Amino acid sequence: MQRFDKTIPRETSASLKYDGRLETFGTNDILPMWVADMDFAVPDAVTEALQARASHPIYGYSIAPESLYQALIDWLLLKHQWPVKREWIVLTPGVVPSLNLVVAALTAENAGVIVQPPVYFPFLSAVKDQHRRLIENPLILEEDDLGNLHYQMDLSQLDNCAREASLLMFCSPHNPVGRVWLKDELLALLAVAKKHNLIILADEIHADLVYADTQHHTLSRLAFKNAPATSSIDAPHAIITAVSPSKTFNIPGLGLSALIIPDATYRQTIQSHLTKIAVSVTNPFSMIAFEAAYRGGADWLSELMAYLQATRDEAVAFIRAHIPKINAVCPEGTYLLWLDCRKLNIDDKALALFFVQEVQLGLSSGAMFGCGGKGFMRMNIGTPRANVMKALDRLKSALS
Image 1 (cartoon, helix red, strand yellow):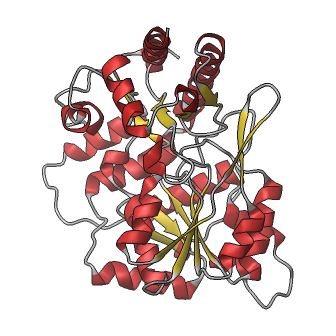
Image 2 (cartoon, rainbow, N blue to C red):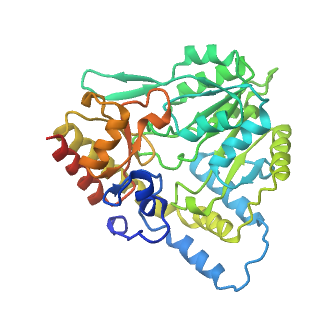
């Protein structure tokens, strides 16, 4: 665990999280826990592969080697028991561009696109920026007798939404609320999609960041496994999955991801759209890191998840014991902590200012995640545990 306790200075490295504090929060005097990257050194295999490639003094135009595709195929089979065919894979310059790409390529202008807020805000902007019609299927927030918060999908309302939509943008595991969806929930979702001929874009970028007390189910694999032998609608082929090593291995700045697209027509349409807008995904360092992470990062990931789970448990226990005005949604996946601050009874602008000015923390305002996000804040715990506990101590003192 020592490697994750190490503090690595990130100031002056052109880090958005650290060097963007002044522009984003108006001050550098905060502990930044907003941008969803981690403050941990990447796996040694990635660093060594990049250094080896950098030692070659020519950085010319490059192509993606077949070994890169095989590394992804091997990883998905090993970690998720998902047999992916080589021809299904389309490389893209990141998951956020992929969201926009799929919306633009597979839906018509003004078509209905469903999102399930509160959700990662690029879902919302991808629909609006592509001039599609945003249809919201808000998650349901439940609270048990002990005050524990838990999110569920509103499948009945989703069925109504699907009547006027052509695409569902689905987040699994869910950012920001940290849900890892159960198999039965996903099967129910697939039934709605099949009933309405709904295409599903499944953002599974956090699929590897799931805690030991739960299990991620890849939606596309589940669809294939449970598809009837004969069906008028080939539902499994209507699922497009976004995957990437970027969150798993802390390399989002290198900008390379993949779409898994079993349907040949959808795949050709998306590939043609990429060609039309002249997007290149052949940065040699991105490709080297992508392959090296999947081939050599498994042990590092196991250590990371044990560390993050201990951080999560300590942080949630501390909040429940010492900060009664805040209720933390205990995440089942991701390194994101969703904080319910509604008991403070202040609006979102005042809430954000409180965290910056009084607590000296830079978090993400829940309001930016759409419907259901008001009164919440998102906290990134992908940092040495001492930083997380320092942040919570500050919050405890500010609310005392």
